[in-house]
Length: 465
Image 1 (cartoon, rainbow, N blue to C red):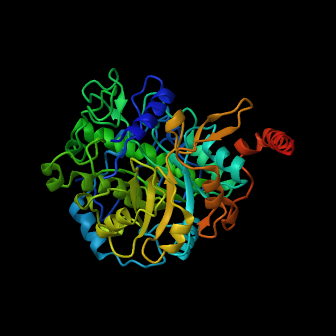
Image 2: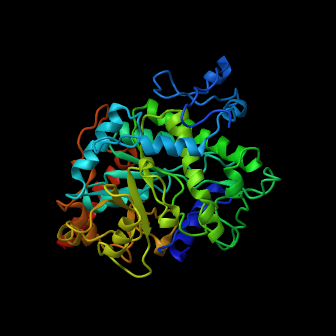
Image 3: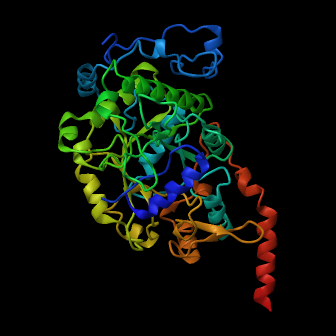
C-alpha cells in the first residue's frame, strides 16, 4: 500500500470516528446457481423495509428493524460448479452486458459506453464526502464537471452505518444531474469474528496500514457455509443488494466494482499466499457476489467492473463487462500509462472494455488522443482528496470564502482546463440525456455560484489594476 493512499485512509478514518476504515492501494447446497429460487415470502413488516414496488428484481428480505432476514438469506447457497457450467453455456452478445437481467436504462448506458470506447475517454472523479470539494474544484477552475462520479459502500456494513447516505447522493447525481454512477465497496468486516461487537471493523489486514489493527477475517471461511464468516458475508452481500435495489428503483444504472485491488494482501479479500491463489478463494467470493445479485436477487441495473489486477484473480469472462486497474505512480506522471494498460489487457478476457479505475494523475488529453490506437481507456478516476492537504489528488483546501484551491503538485489549473476542454475527454455537459434524468447542476455547485461570481469579479478587478 503506498503512502499517498494511506493519507486517504486517514481521512476515511476521521469520517468514521471510532470505525476502522480507510482506502488501500498500490501499483503493482440447498439451492443452486443453476436453478435459483425466489426469496421466501416476507411479513408486512419486512416488506416495509424492501425497495418500492417498482423494483424489477427480487427484493431482499428485511426484518422489521431494517436488517437482513438471515433465515431467508441463508436458505440460498451458491453452487460453484453449477454456476460455472451455467456461465460456460451462456450465449453472450457484444451489445449486451453479462447480466441477463438488464433493464432498458442499463442497456442504454452500456451501449453508449461501447459506442465511445476507443474513440473518447470518460472523465470521472471519486467522491470524498457530501461537501464534494473535488467536483467544486473542477467547476470553479473550468466551468465543467467530470461525467462520472465514484461512490463507496464503505460505511454500510459498520455499526454506525452510512450517515451521509451515499446511495441517495448517487440517485441525485444520476436522476437530477444526469451523471454516471460508479460504486466500489471497501468491505468492512469485524476485526475479530468471535467478538464482533467489541473490536471494531476493518477492511485492511493486520499491518497493512499504520495505526489500523486490521481484521483477521478469513476469506476461505467466508465462502464456506456453516462458518461465522460465511454468515457475515451473506448478510453483507444482501445488505448491499438492498442498496443496489434502491438505485434500481430510482432508475439508476451502476458500474459496480466489488472486491477491488485483489492483487496484494492489504485487503482481507486480496491475495496473501500461493495456497490462497491455488484454492481460488477470491474467485469463489466473486462468484458468490455475482450469483446472489444476478441469479438470486436478479438485479437489473448492474454493469460489472472486475478490478482483481492479476492473472491469479482472473474470473469467468461472463461475470464482468469492464476490467479495471488502479495506478498510483510515486512521481508525477500524466502519461497514458501504456505499460499498465498492456498488463491489464494481458490478463483480461478479449473484447472487454478497459478502465483506469483509480489513478493519482490524470492523463494528458493530447497523449490520450495520440495513443488511442494502442491505449483505449474507457475512463480514468482520480481518488478523492478528502482531508489530504498537500497530498490531495485534486483539491488541497479552500480559501477564506470556502472556494477550492487546486493542488498544483498533482494537476495544474492549466492542465485541468486542457483536460476538461479536450475533444478526447467526455465531460458532464457532453453526456447524452439518459432516459428519466434531468441535467441540472448539483446542489453543492449551485450553492457556491454566488461565491464563485464574487471571487471572479475580485480577481478581474485585481488583474486590471
